[in-house]
Image 1 (cartoon, rainbow, N blue to C red):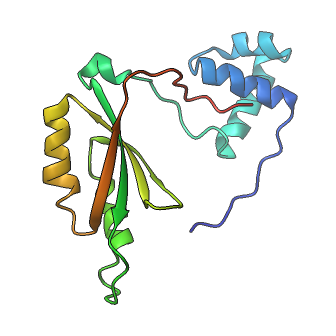
Image 2 (image 1 turned 180 degrees about the horizontal axis):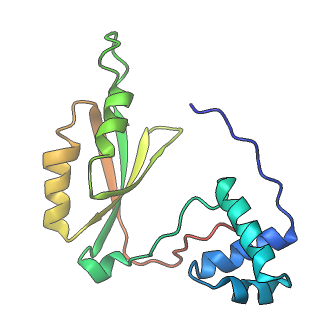
Length: 163
């Protein structure tokens, strides 16, 4: 586990800047300046501080999966085999490395409770899902079991952090 970085002190203006940038990452500094009541150069300095401090990790384009042929979203709970005595074959480490290379996996979170991981998987259709499960996930030597739920409808979908 990585050491926790010192938290950057954020004031009300930083929060307003972050809310605006979460809505539109391409907004101009002039527009931001008008929204928060600072000069564009002061806004630029604050945004750079937020970037350098790791509060703003990166800027991305949000692509709805359905618009690029990935019409089916599955949430897959994964349980791994128990730890082995062989330190060269740690099931968790093997799984963590493998999941990084699976393009269908949009998100992987380690969990408490009965299952070890939750995967958010984006696939074209049920056949694509079946191939992923049988040819990739269940073929991994660390995977003991999995349970899947499919998304029927998205009631809320945001990337914004509540500020």
